[in-house]
Length: 453
Ligand SMILES: Cc1ncc(COP(=O)(O)O)c(C=O)c1O
Image (cartoon, rainbow, N blue to C red):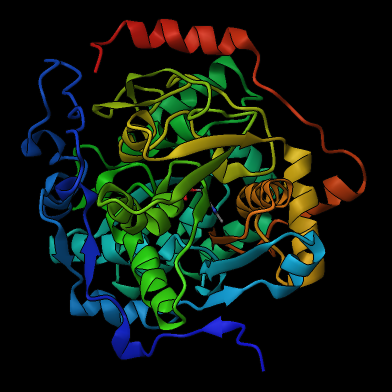
């Protein structure tokens, strides 16, 4: 019988996260204090994050131990299976083997709990009782709600309005895990009230929701903010995906020619790919591809420079590809891919040509996702379908070039709570959207106001 899934035993779960900081061929530009323009010091972030996570954010260590209490929770669904997509391969009729890490097996349905559990744990260790956060598609908010519940922490989630309206079931998941969820912009915060006064119909954005969540915890001794992507420590926690994948591929004597992930803030892409980027730095020939939407093309078209992570300019200045912190994205259905910026680590790797980026139109991603559901059964999240569209493109190229290829990609989450977006596709209501050049020019002007990295 052919082997479809490669499992690791529970005692084979990785016990350390991988920190690419130790292996970067060129150093990254540091985050800057927005007031002084100087590189950020740990104490500058102490009001927003607990110090144990700030230490991880800045750590130069290659390997960081995963605490036992975090492993215990991760074992509820990890190690996640590495699967071979035989049926999808057959439908593509190309000389490719397609492997995917199935991150849709977590309780919240995506890769997000990998860092949610770790962040909730470190906050608890630091004595934090309340966490506020933002969420786009609702995947992150639901993951953090679950993780906070596991560690007895109160959780408040600001959910981008367009997703809040599109996805009532995500809100109910958050409530089920004991969290409170608000439509953002909300009347809970000053920044939310100001935006609502100016534009009562504002669809919201991740930048706005982040500002609300940060305002919500400011000045409260026992409260902190948590971010579901972008930052170094978040990407670090996600590397368990790639580390498992390397062990699993090793068991069957395979190594990928191409590694693919969709990229919103960059965490699932980095989680799978960073251990392979390490191999590439050490001389392996491998293509590493980040897939993003044409409507929010931070990696493929936006400038690289310093910018804020949020609308109200409360975060440090991060060196990244950015569409501008005041960017309001089109209401496409891949809610998790609508962030204006990209993880500094991923942005740096693209700049250094260790990673390449491609963008896909909404309709071709749904075409790919539906082909997947009709061959492999599992219904992907709209974000994940961007990675699948990139797999389809790679397979087509392999066929044209007559080259055999092994493709590995991150199946970042299921779409069972995103079925309304499928309804929009089936009823012909979905449209493609390419961000106009004026928006890119606007981002370039905005970034030019800040120091250049
Ligand atoms: C299923 C899924 N995949 C991908 C993403 C994109 O986020 P990131 O780039 O941080 O992995 C999200 C974000 O919400 C998501 O829910």
